[in-house]
Image (cartoon, rainbow, N blue to C red):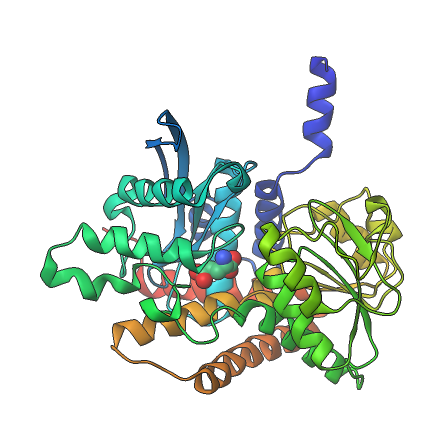
Length: 430
Ligand code: GLU
């Protein structure tokens, strides 16, 4: 590839960071945001990059690169996931951290936004290696994270086991007296380690609930609606689980390994039984046929749930989309150009910072539960999560109606106004 081609590629392919900055600018103009606050929000408070060595199973040492970007903490401690992915770089971490700031603000949580992770493909490592990598990363981050400072959680390719290793490592670095009151340094832990009943399903539940409320307002039901899901990890699985229980028809699914279709519907639980032991790969599932991945997004359906990575819906495929609703389970799945096309075509996008906020809302309840030394039942938790999601959803819906804007702009208006108010009340030190 020559230099011209490289520049052209960069111009065509927007990064998630470009997208989030564009979304911020659009909102700043819509609400006439205080220019000083706009300056602050367009940058991140801190960007931590750590390199750390880990001994591999074969005795050799590999050096890894880990990130934690802390975007903003005006509303409370930094909050957001850690992902393990070969494509993760500093710009992605910055964009994802900014989205967390808007998401926690929109949900009315006392948190700021952060994101991070390690640039690696977890498929290339044994479980023992992943444990050592996670523990050493936690040690390298040291007191840059903490239960009242910055609270990581699961994200792409990390799970409750990863969180248990982080909690154990972080707590082990504290004096015996302090250990147990540091448990809430991470959320998304297993039940036996201070985890919250229902945190596993919280994000997918929020995706389902957003869709349910969306159709209810239009006087329609979920039952009989046909949908497709990109990504069959924690979010994709739980969203499909709740939707199918309500009578919606899950008929195509795509992940990094395969694209599958069954016009009569795919069994969510059979697909999970197939994918789980294969490190979440859906390839080889015999309850559906393989299809051309290029035609996935243009399948005829009522709604699409992108629940994998960012920048999946772009100028390359947006015009061909037939669904009238996109429920963003992933963070940043629609780029700004793709979004313009969808909006022109009358598609409603239920934006990520609303649609997938059930996860961080669940995290907030886990954090409170640990902080207060309590243990809540699944029923109690689901009621609490549902209440918060309903509030955020109604706020966004009413703002979109009042101001005659799309749902993402409405969500941003609410989130950024709340942050602006906190800055105006507190002023800038000194
Ligand atoms: N990784 C999730 C997200 O993107 C959850 C974050 C959290 O629970 O802190 O919202």
